[in-house]
Length: 383
Length: 181
Image (cartoon, rainbow over all chains, first blue to last red; front, top):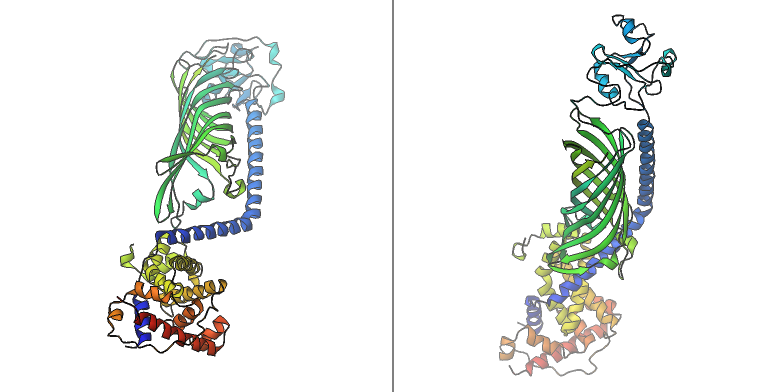
């Protein structure tokens, strides 16, 4: 064997493991590459995303305004019972004139309309009802009547009562639970079990299976008190003050050759204002409500837990958060003026809660809160 | 997957998707050999580690350019060699040559020193060569570059490459011959 062959053989067959530092440095450089790739992607998609976000926000605002307008206009409108006036040919001839003149003006043709009419209360006493004969009289401005002109001025007529299950003073039949239609107040407590997400590039990428980061389902909770007012028979306005509003995001991150457990936890105090539209009012007093509104929160503390070691992130996140809510709630009466409620609610933050740090400016790690909450509440009707 | 069941195809696919676990498997599979190559070019561990690091970053950045025509190891080694040349060129040490013609030493493979000599002992002797001469020697003796290619890479004449190679060979042989192991 000559020298060169001998030399080449030694070099080619040699192996020596480099120190671990080399791989760590390689990873760091690859991480930087990845950040730049993401920045590049973000910058390209930035304009489009920004436009989509602005359009979404505009659409949301328009939707809320439209919904609010509909709700408030509906709140002042009466139910559309089928009313046949006395002058209508369809008015039953079987009802003797003596029983209704001069007080009875209209007739509800379907018995299912009566539960709606029974809520007419004192102050609306220009309503007349003869229960056994299924006859009612409605105020002109209470119903949308197609034959409005045929209704006489009912203020001229006396209110009569012929007994039956409903009283003319507007009091509910004794067999049903009492229900406040408007002007009533209520208060209670509310708790949420919340599936919480911090929406940013990292956690969204972590939902893809081929990424280094794995975002995990995380749970928090909200505990607070509620107070509300009925502004109409169908609409309540409610305020909720959550003393504790805990959101979490757990994720695993592949770093330096191993997975590291991370958990970010925020503790807010938050205030929610919502409109609660009565979708359905079932016999027995149970209520189905559509809930929409807005919230604002104040960050009390923010912690990150990395493999069991905790650090504070308070300086890296904004104190204020705000957003919109939407959901559904079911209220079930459990006693005199008490209701138990359950349902779900989605809260979406509209502002970037990441304030930035020495390395990453706020716009490169734009972060929003999202939670899907299971509601449990108790409320008491005060009057 | 562990380093023991190295599956080149799946690792390459993973590396192309920037899968960090696959990148680590690829690195761990080739790092030992490539580190030895870096050491043979530099003779210094700290510099060899820098070259190794830079080389593997290039490997991962350009992994999509690897077509399965040749061996993956050969492709990575080419990157390591080129990175070493660039590194030494930046340090401006490629012109550190052997000025005097060494005398012809005797080299026998039955020499006891050579028979028990390992990589580390050889590195100690390689380190003693001027860096320019060491680079020429390795490029020709280990990586099989022709003198024309070396001249082009290092911006020297073919004659310089040939003479530096011969002088480096003689000097290294004399270093090894004088060793007492």
